[in-house]
Amino acid sequence: MKRNLLFSFPAISVTQPIGTFYVTSMQSDDLSSIAFADVRRLDTSTTAIEEYLGIQRTLSATRRKDIGEYVQTGDATFPTSIVIAVEDERCLEYDEAKHTISFFEVKADEDGPAIERDSVARILDGQHRLAGLKAGERIFGLPVTVFPAIDMAEQAYIFATVNIAQTKVNTSLAYDLLAYARSRSPERTCHDVAVALNDAAGSPFYKKIKRLGSRTAGVVGETLSQATFVMALLPYISRKSRTDREDLRNGVSLPLVTNFNQFQQTPLRNLFIEERDAEIVDILWDYFDSIRQHWNDAWKSEEPGQIIKRTNGFRAFMNVFGEAYLAVGGSNIKRPTSADYEKIWAESNVHDEHLNRENFLPGTSGERNLTKSLQSALAVYRRKRNASPSVA
Image (cartoon, rainbow, N blue to C red):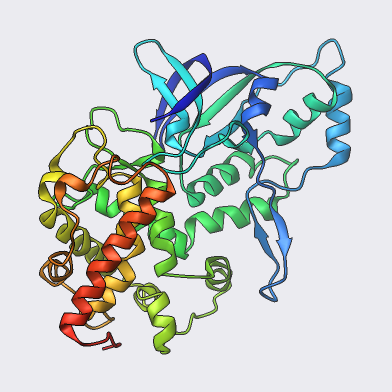
């Protein structure tokens, strides 16, 4: 992993029902250099129902100016924490022995794309304080709460629970975000599938998915962040997740997919609409169980550089999941078995010893090359079978 240390600070870890996070103190200019605000805005371009996007409310120029003036006073203080979420696990490291937290910018590797300094963390609470300090040209020491990489549902939930009782925040926004995290939605289903596969003994992903994006104390072998899993699964359930989420929150029933072209794009969508989430868990279980069995040596290996269970390998296999699922007859009626997928992998020229960063370089190029290799195996399988997939 190629990464550049930005800075380290003393910190403590805090464990609560949601997971483990960290509390530290940072200079405001250091924090501003790595944190960005994803402003939540109104968008009416795709639906008649006004829909919020992002996490933060729009930055108020008046409030920024007021805070900028306030920080010039002799008794100015911000005693409450700025809350941030580190977007990528590679950008954060907590040393339990030294009680220090370190932030990094990273280059592209098998775990994901490059993360520049100004994109290391998302602000969940405190954007006005940071903006006001910058406007007032003052540098403060600030208490900072750091959540490791988490998916959007959990980020929204944290923002909402932090702000729901504060008059400075539009309560409609807070409740909207709380509903986003709690109500049924494509993101929530993907989140729940990830949790189920991580928690079930025997699952290919048993104790391999990092909740909140950080390694669980006492657990060895966690190789994927929960956010990585969710984002890879989401397109197979919904291509317009914001619209789906809004419709479901407003009691609008989603129509089942009957068009084959749409089914090809989102083969798990009908299962989601019919609330058969457990079957989505089973389908992903069988799919990755076939991968675990075919490339068993690579799957079992804990050697550095192995990619099959890491971000690049996972993304490549998810890139071809829909094609593979349909190729072996997957539908709302027939659930393919591990043995069905094995017929595809048997045509692959990729062997256990190939699944490393030397053959599939870190970053998107390695993911893309492995995807192409798997698609070639699919093409051979289809030619031999001489049949095209159909909706059963």
